[in-house]
Image 1 (cartoon, rainbow, N blue to C red):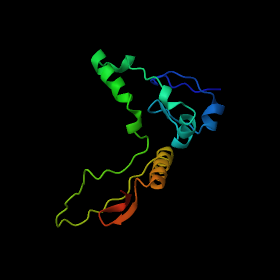
Image 2: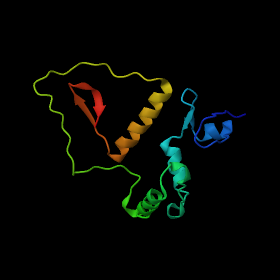
Image 3: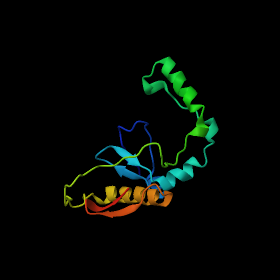
Amino acid sequence: MFHVLADLEYPCILGVAFISGSKIILDFDRKSLAIPDSQIDKVVKTIDEWNVEIDLCKTGLEEKQKQELRDLFSFKGIFSDKPGFTHVLYHEIDTGDKPPVVSPPYRYDRVKQMILNCHVEKMLKEGTIIPIQSPYAPPVVL
């Protein structure tokens, strides 16, 4: 048994056993699939990152732009797949003397909530975000 998502960027056929074993989430409304980061990490670790060829045929870029992008990709050592902090920029919102606005948290369906929770937990573990309490919003992460 398999499911068909016709409009994916790259056509593929996945068996139900593979989908459930990989914890893939099918979104029939958006005609897409999502693979949890925990599963992606397992796949990525098996790829030799220095030998990955990037296909730029369908990008719509001119040949000069493609070459510039290839040149940029040759500096793999300066890029990271882990997000981090910068001390170059600082962002602050001045609310003046305006009082906090009360608003309830957004509600999501079960699948979207699971995806959000997964990403929030990952960012908490990485130290990318920290939980805070603020009178301006329900508990949020920054």
